[in-house]
Picture 1 (cartoon, rainbow, N blue to C red):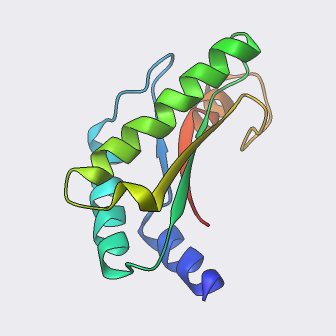
Picture 2: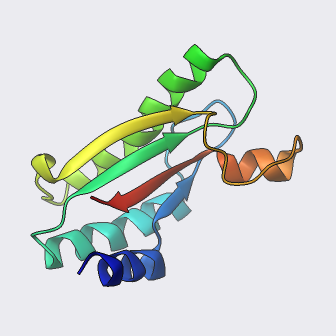
Length: 119
């Protein structure tokens, strides 16, 4: 069921983080995405949405575009080992849905992310 799939995804890692003004995947993100790819291949009926998020800095329009790139980078990584592209949607929330509040580097770092959610 959806709840147990979400729990399993959370255990292997459902979020990757990005540097300031970047949509580049780092080694930690790639490790998480390798686990996500294996999980998706083992659960072929699941579909996911990768939600790109930004910190509060920058305009709404800029952050929506950056959030889209932050959702697309993990999607492209997941496609390489053979996850079907029809199973992965990408969306951007820009700075509209922060994970944590606060106007400091610690908060901003937690908000620069892409979250994989089960549809």
